[in-house]
Length: 259
Image (cartoon, rainbow, N blue to C red):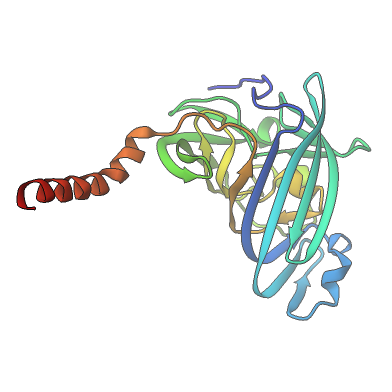
């Protein structure tokens, strides 16, 4: 089991990660956290009970999430988070312990942990993901594969969560959402060099909790970053070029012998 508590090597002043997804619903912790512009917007439905509130759209909405490190003191980073849902935009600032991924509001309110990166690990490892003590959700580093990214074909780890989602039947807090009782099982792809989230569900993440959001229920993908994700998988990149190489070779041979 890998329990590395070192800050990620890529975390520096000005580091930026941007994610994008398309959703037809947003789950909020309670009605008071639903942005007012959505309450009277056409094509938007609001439903739910005392536990969670569901905001649904008649058409899928583009969601953009930007994470930016404004300052770092020792292992504590000051993040600026910008969330855009359609034409709506909101900004929050949070403190993140880079060693533990614990996220707090400036007033000290604990929001849990972020899952936008994980500690260094290897295939076959089982590591703590979110939660505390007996409620910790673990992940299994189940496979090493490759994926197309904004920086070419990268090696990625596929992770699987070990949780038993039982459904939300009462009001819960952001930290409770990151327990084995409420955390949704999922698959996520992480870059094998930086361990940054490349693609997957970001539900129950502490950064979302800063906006009062519990989950989106859809995959998000890294669409921009100024962080070097590491070397590309050249074998796969060359393998994809092989048909073109063969075609060029055939043309050259044909031209040489028959023209």
